[in-house]
Image 1 (cartoon, rainbow, N blue to C red):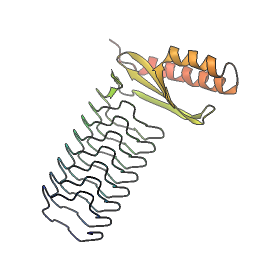
Image 2: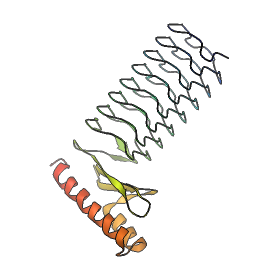
Image 3: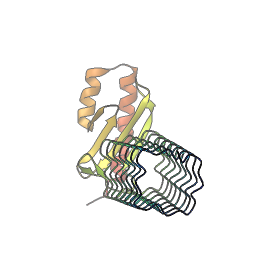
Image 4: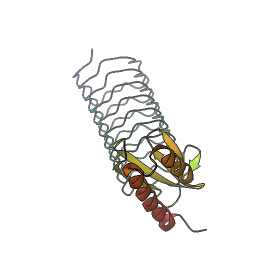
Length: 239
C-alpha cells in the first residue's frame, strides 16, 4: 500500500506495480517509463511532469489525478478512468485511450496526435488548443466538450477523415432525449451523430420522419440540421 507516499522524482522505470494502491501519492517528476500499472488505484495522485512513456495503465483509476505536463506518449490507457483529471499540456501522442473515461478532464493544450480515442468518453472535457491531428475518434462521445482552437486535421471518425478548420459543430441539448446533435465535416460529406445514431444527413432526416414526424422534437431537429448544413457550406474546404 503506497497511498499518500512521497515518491517525487523516484526512478520506478519498468517496475511492476500492477493493481497497486497509490491513491493520493506524490509522484511528480518521477520516472515511470515502461512501468506496469495495470488496474492500479492512482486516484488523486500527483504525476505533474512525470515520465510515463510506454507505461501500461490499462484499467487504472486516475480520476482527479494531476498529470499536467506529464509524458504519456505511447502509453496504454485503454479503459482507464481519467474523469476530472488534469491532463493540460500533457504528451499523449500515439497513446491508446480506447474506451477510456475522460469526462470533465482538462486536456487543454494536450498533444493527442495519432492517439487512439475510439469509444472514449470525452463528455464535458476541455480540449481547448489540443492537438488531435491524425487521432482515431471513431465512436467517441464529445457532448459538451470544448474544442475551441483544437487541431483536428486528419482525425479519423469511424473511417471518415475530418476536414476543414471547423469540422465539428454541436447543438444542444435538444430533442426528446435532451441530448446533443453533432455534425462532422468529413472527406465523405456531413455526418450526423446523436445518441446511438451515426449516419449521413439524409439518413438522419429519414430516421427523423419515422420517429418524430412533424411533432415539436422533429421541428427542433430539422432547424438544427439546417444550421449544420449552412455551417458545412461555409466551412467545408473548397477544392
